[in-house]
Image (tube, one colour):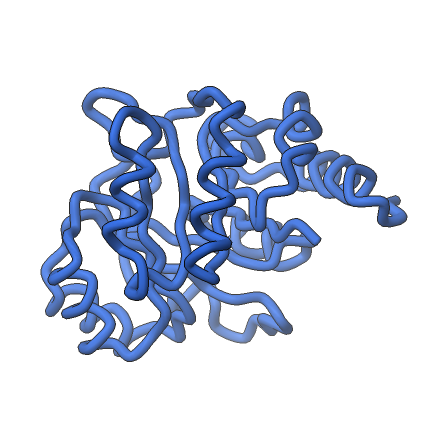
Length: 217
């Protein structure tokens, strides 16, 4: 089974669409980005909503531990995603402070696999994203997916999941799903005019299920 994470939710309508979808995880970005949200906003959007089995992921970039801990106190996050240059010591400090699983983003390129190995035994999961100058993520740019098996192999060696992000859309998701990543992380690829699009979500879910041999709608 390939898990789906719909990231960059930034309105009540986005949250409702993602909650009604087949996603396993909903991501919220608490870092400088066009999709940045405030904890108070997210709390309002989640009020009265049933999460079911879905889990909430808070995405941070080089944030102080105190900042992350403050957001965790305000919201029922299940997972913290560190998407910047955080080193082992910083990840360890976050885990100690919030007592939640912590995923580490790795940006594809020279040294990426070595970087994953440095977090072995500490990171509870990985998100491999495209490396784009001046941006940490959400760029809509893919990387060379022929490298995906190497990332999956290293994550499996560590016994943690590996999600693939960057430029994934309903038109190319089948090609990525053929590599059978543990998860697929999508933001711009499920949007139309900056809003989460239920039709695009359904197309992605159908294609992923089909690739995995499951019955889709």
